[in-house]
Length: 530
Image (cartoon, rainbow, N blue to C red; front, side):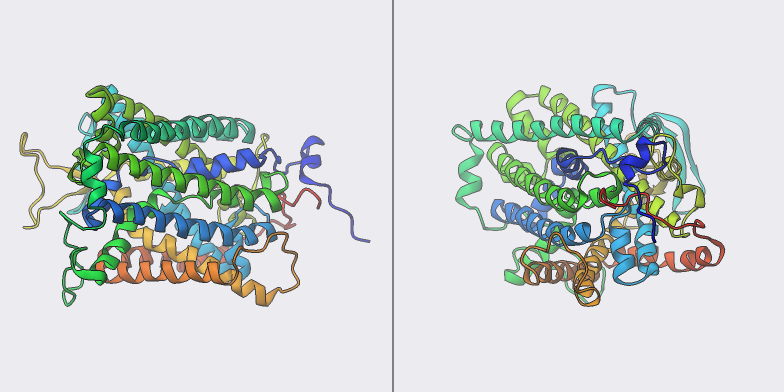
C-alpha cells in the first residue's frame, strides 16, 4: 500500500524540510499588486503620450493593457489551481510542452526577466533617494568607468552601490523566512497603494478648478505632438498616430511596451504556490483581484495626470517624471520630494516581491536537475536560500556594467558641460530586448491551457478559466498582434530577446547531460491535502 504523504505544513511543524504555507489570500494579493506597482506608472505615461498623442488614446492604452493582463491572469488561474506547485509558470510550460520549454522560461527569467527587473527597480530606488541625498548620484564615482570594449564599461557609483546594497538587504531578509518576507510585502504594498489612491484623489479634487481639464477632455481623441515611429526595417516607412486608423493601431501597440512593463510580474504569485494556503482557490483569486485593483489604479492615475497637467506637460515632463510634474502643480518644489518618497516606497516593496518569488522558480528547476543542485534545498527557515543568493549575485552583476552611448554619427556621447563620456545601463538594454520574449512566454503558457484541456481532459480543475475559450483566445490574438508590430517596428529590441531565450537551448543540453535530479523526486510544495 502506498504510504500517505504528510501535508507540508505538518512536515514543517515536525521538523521536516518542506515549505511553510504562510501566505493567505490577502498576502497573495499583496504579492500580485506589490510586484506590479514599481516605478513605471510614475514615468512611462510620458512616452505613451508622445506615441498616441491624446488623452483618450493615453487612457485607452492603459485600459487595453489592463484587459490583456486581466485576461492572462484569469487563464493562468486554471493552471495554478490544476498544478499548485512551486515554480508556477515554469511548471505549466514543462507540463504543457516539455522540460525544454519550461527550462527556456526559467533560464530567461534568471538571466534577465527577474534579475534585470530587480536591477532596474533597485537603481530607480537609488535615483529617487538621490533627490533627497544629492551625494547618491550616477556620476559620483567610487570606481570610475573602465571601458572594456567599444560598447561596454564597468563602474561603481554611489547610485550603483546603493542599488547593490538594496538587493543584498532584501535577499538576506528573505532568507530569514516567508513570514518576514510577507510582512515587508504587505506593509509596503499597502503604503504605496494608498499613495496611488492619494494621487487619484488629489487629481479629482483639483478637477473643479484645474485649467488643464477643459483642454485635455474637450479634444480627447485627436492626436497631437506625436513622435514618428521609425521602424528598424529599412523597407518599412515611418508612421505616427496621425496617419489614420493603421497609424493609431501601430502607435497603440508600440506604446504598450511601457504599460505592459509597468503591469508585469502579476504571475509571480504562481512561483510561490508551495507557500500559499489553499492554493487552488487563493492563487487564481489573488491574481484576478490583484490585477483588477492595479488596473483600476493605473487608469485613474492617468486620469489625474490629465486633470493636473496640460497634455504637452505629460509628453515633455522633465526626465519623463510625470507624477512628479503633476504633484508639482499642487505642492510646488515640494512635489518632487513627495514623489521621490512615494517612488522609493513603491520600488522597495516591488523589489521585495520580485526577490521573494524568483528563487522559487530556480528551486523547481533544480528539483528537475536543470539548475544548480544546491538550489533544490530549503534552509532552516524553509526558503530556497541558495536560489535567493544566486539571484542576488547575478542581479548585482547586472547593475555594474554600463553601455557606452553613441551619437547618430557614431561618436561617443559626451556631457556638454564637462566633456566626460556618458554611459547607459546594461540592464536597460536587456529589459528592452526581453519584453518581446516575456510576452511570448505568456502566449505560449495560455496556448498550453488549450493543450492541457486536450491532453488531460480528466485532470482535476478546481477553477476553470473565465470565458474559455474566447477570453484566452482574445489574449493570444491581442498579444500576438503586439509581438508582430514589435518585430516590424522594433526589430533591434526584438531579435536580441529571442537570442537570449535561445541561449537556453545549449544550456539545457549541458544541464541535461551533466545535471542530475535529486535521488527521490518529490514536491515539498504539495497541496495541503496531499
